[in-house]
Length: 387
Ligand code: PMP
Image (cartoon, rainbow, N blue to C red; front, side, top):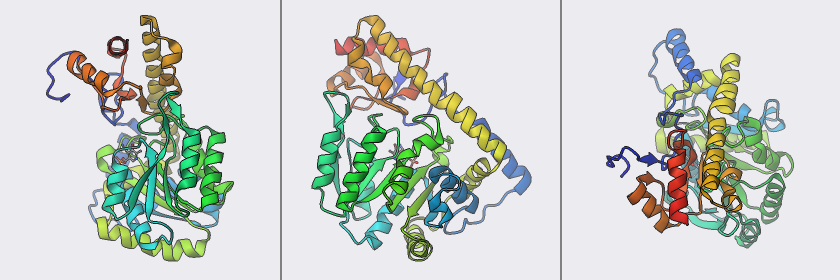
């Protein structure tokens, strides 16, 4: 609908991809440098990747997820495989768990969640359920509901958690709440899949955005699956770069039964993962200057900071028009690329038809679609439809 709209005022807040201040897709300079290194130093190579994927990518990806020198990595308890971005990671996770998980083959995700979780789980033979997450009244986390639902799932179920920058709500648990969630999950013996599509987008810091994952491992000694996407944080969307990590109780299990079953699950779906993006991400992660640049320029300065700024500007403009700050403060307290505005389907419909502003019917906006040129217009439209 956005593409077909000929209005010069049209705004796309539906996109799940980062846009720069001109509303254009952004190729990270550090990725361009890595591409140059790849072609100049390694030359063209279109052979297959090994079944487990690009070894440099796997190592670098595990390092940023679990932390340099972390106990799980030192103890060789992480088995990693390259995937077709985050979606592919979740698919392999489901196929793998369907084969080897001895507990209940029912995966629960938050209500609401990214639209593909149900699809993927059911496609790969899992049952699917939801746990409470969004509190309509507070426009924040329904923590009590979430804990209650975790307790009422059958023991040893599978719980999908968004590691950071929850999609679509932009609401993440606090550190204290994460502890409560871990304790509830542990008490019920559930198995966690941490879906990590936005590492670096929530706080601008890779380590902080992996906090919950590291906490679950270090403080609660949990085995788990972590799916990791480089679509957003490296801007490699269409190249389909991702890694799946399985954290096991010991190296023996990790490097034998987990490794062979992961390979088997992945082979049956994709044979091997895309080579080009794996090499690019590997160069970025393993070349110290490029890695430093990626962390600094891309995450701290450019992407997450621009999104924070747009959140502030949207709130500022709404308040300027007369909106009550306390009714809209969730815009700035939510984090990551998305904001769950609280607008209902009818209001969204007016935004689309009257104002040419496109967003999903659940009221989610992609904050990356805002820029200095359109934020005032968007604020005015939101104010008008909601008063
Ligand atoms: N999980 C969540 C929560 C997401 O928002 C997304 C992307 N929209 C993904 C997984 C997977 O994305 P991709 O396959 O492009 O890495």
